[in-house]
Image (cartoon, rainbow, N blue to C red; front, side, top):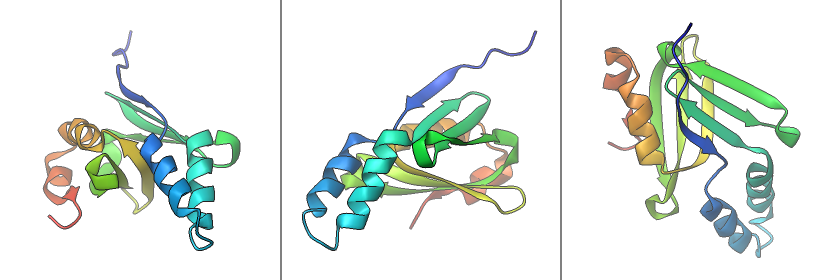
Length: 130
């Protein structure tokens, strides 16, 4: 019998991302950002557990990406929405990247992920600009 998978966070992007992008969507220039935020709100879902990070996204949430912590070589965060939410870019062995957009409680989520990284990955990870 294997180790039980415990969920730390499961849900969609922060609602503030949608609200902010709808407000800037009132201008013609902001319309593409609004469309992106609506699609994220409808179909993007994160699941962060003690064993892996899973992201369901794409058209109608049909694409799924799973990353185990041992494959992560770097995590970079960027605060958004006055720090209420943030984006993360996870780099895995082989150079592939997984973007997590508008993550709620992104500082706590980053801390949780960071605790599970290798010491080498911890050294190069952090917030953009720090």
